[in-house]
Image (cartoon, rainbow, N blue to C red; front, side, top):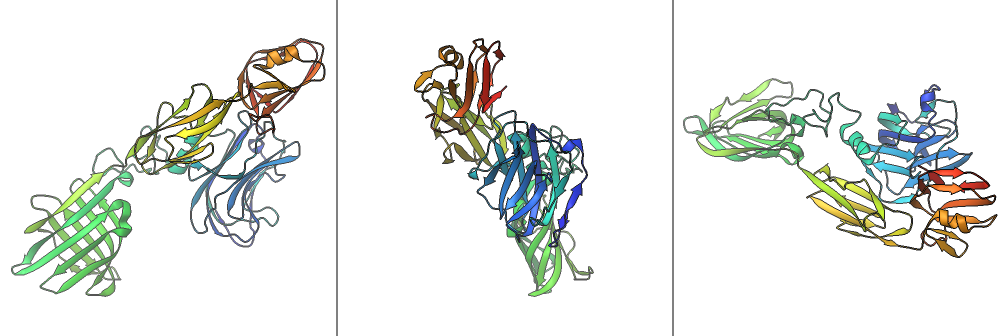
Length: 476
């Protein structure tokens, strides 16, 4: 979709499909041409039930609950005239955090990151793309998807790498990281041509006519065509051909064809095709085309009299990332790679460490680049990383008295008490059976001086008598 500078928008009519309250993912590719306003709407529920936009050049995601907006803003910029994949993920039945992903990985730095539990406010409206008021977006969008679920980090990464799919399941796809519906595999190696990395290099010469040498030198890789080059010289015609840009390269089992723009004796405006066939000896052929497509020169295929060309084929490398927590049971790392996760060579993976109730994150071991509880790993080898946690104060308190569990605090509580609970996961089956009124307030940090998140209760809660008021607690 192309959104011009006039503030045009796309409106999708009301549907219950868009009335999402418990969990949500918005994903799309953007290529902005300019940033004319303070805000640039990408996707919005028109009454701001949920909004994904650019604040300047920085992705911003917010949702509405009880009429109050909660937002996250990434401290990373989207560039003009460049395709970038963005995703906004919220799991209101999980940790409630509003997460933003850029090019397949969660951002390592937030200006602010909001947290809100389900459900969101309900609105029976459609969605609007590209504009709301003066907050218009200018540029291109592609592959927009809205999911009534919170995608996992690996699912977001798959969207970035393989888009919305090429119609071939990844288990059968000969190149799952790049869309290739045709599944072309010219060399029958089981790796799709779009994932093959060919390199042709070397030099050699032959004699198309006795006494007149034709020589070729080249070094070109299909994964970096922009750095490739070739030079051909034929003494009979004093023909000096030099590539100026390589535009394509493809191969079969023993033949590589290179196409590109070239100069002939210093004059521009020609295109060239070089064909190298590996054998004993190798052979070469070159065809030069005029700007109108007619043939300027054609050498014909000829075996080398001396020299050699090397054709190598390397499939894309992958490395394994393994995560662990120390001591066991004190926290978690997202994405969870305790069993090992495979990533393509060169990928950047952001890891997020979260402490369980009663513990606090301390440090990383084996991290390439860390910023607090965020670790960024560069996959250039198999790697392992450990999140280290330490014990903090007991997880529950009433005033200045601390308890090891919610149930023990309730047993000791009096009418009107507030039981404060640290954020993280607590596993208990609670029974409230006294004729008193209490408040359960979760989400406190390790020092109990601020509410910074949610407490997740893994277990049952039975109220047989009295009144229990619950704040910042998610029942799993």
